[in-house]
Length: 380
Image (tube, rainbow, N blue to C red; front, side, top):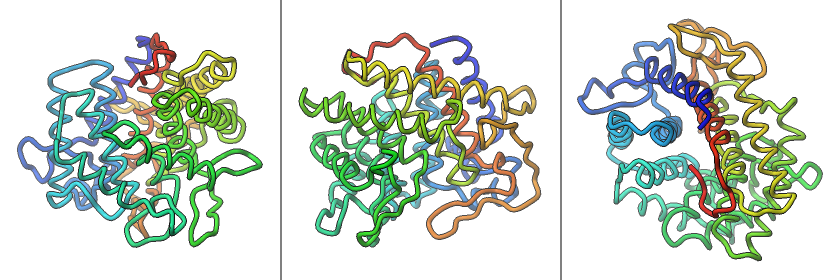
């Protein structure tokens, strides 16, 4: 890994650790991310905690352990996993398939790459996604239980997890095929959000592109030659579309705070996977890898240049192409409304925004490391 980006990723990690990581309810050997900084008393007491934000915090800790293996960080990863289940009423599952998919991805990586295993969690989560598959209702898997909204944010990460875990590659491929058949904009080739009762929900978010890039790259790595060509072609097409429509001057669009704070970071994570793992030696393969790498690095440079600095550590902006705003303890806070978390008045206050910046710095480190995509094994 390039030392510049390794150092910047380490600074991003330290910033989140200093401002956000706290014991859960003061209990020993626990840790979760406080959802806002500066925090209110309710924040410090984990009156809100946001399941899927914590899953991305865990994923970032695994990134950091790959970058710089440390016994203390393995302890931190273990505490994060333990505390997630404790805060979730001693359960791994909830009512939202996208939430569960993000946790499943993070837990699988924690086990495989950091040696922190929860043997009963992964089969339980895998079963959630396998049994939720309902082509007779138009899916795909739904966004949440007892719902008929089938979307990319659920099927994309669930597919990534199923491609990596157990004997579920066929279902992961069905998820990729369903998205390609159902949710691709024929004009721009970007991914629509989802389909509800047969009608397209035509919103196009950065992270929908990211999860489909991740899924199709995993499928290109893991399938035979004929299927690999099909999945790689989808990656080529989507990388070009993101570059054209969602990354002015190469810098990924921001989506504010709240849940949107994670969107660009997720896209950067899976662009980095394309850059380091997409197999093949054709000109199109090389262009996709190079374009993905360029977007990650342009975004990372811009986010770093536009950061604020607090106590010597970075505070990233919600929009990487403009100056970060310094958050304060006042003003409206992020609120959970109708299944989503909206933004704080100053979005930089939200843990999601800072996790995205951290994710981006780790992604920049990955794409500047020496790698060989043709090995057929995704670098993580």
